[in-house]
Image (cartoon, rainbow, N blue to C red; front, side, top):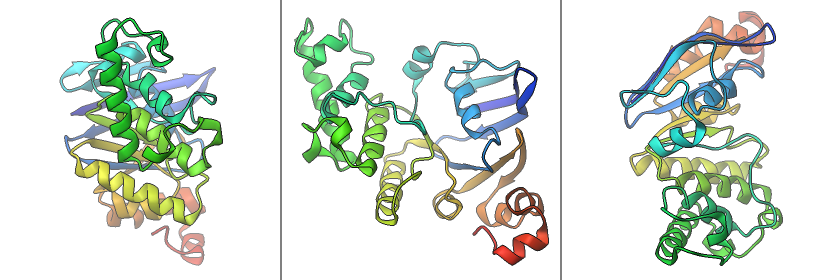
Length: 260
């Protein structure tokens, strides 16, 4: 479904990605882990068109998308969330999701969300999509609450709802459990499992290694812009290169405990 081939990217001479290749099959749940600054979010930014690589190619469902615009890539079926939430703070949860749902509605504008509609039919469809996505993430009762008044964990789920409103076939989640308490982490874990059950192909960046190992059928590890491991969770968690990336040495890894 997705093929990332030998992607290279540098910023002012600093290497961010060094020949990274990733294959993602339809229906797969891929975990992406690695220390801070290893290139995880940069990889997502390349896939979604935010960054254009210096070399390499990205293909999605047979089409090359390496240098296509962000909006065009989204229309092809790739949606994502961000580490730093990109919500409209003063708009309600329902309005936030409607803005995303407007994608693909002919003649619609953001003004449709605010009642300045030209396309009544399109707005009605967007309202239904927004309600459905809020229901999926457990925020239907919070639809009239401004985004900035939502608890942090609810804001995370709202970010996921906005991505789902794009009707993606591939969903990229960038650190969905970051900053959450244990209860909220369990909620986001269950939400990811539910979304996966809907048949959406997913890739998840996460610092919670235990969560990734428990959710994903395959895990890749990045370190200093290079892919150092790719395989089933048990295999990756025992890889000496992975232990060294996280703990410095094999001895220190055993002293601190395996990242599983």
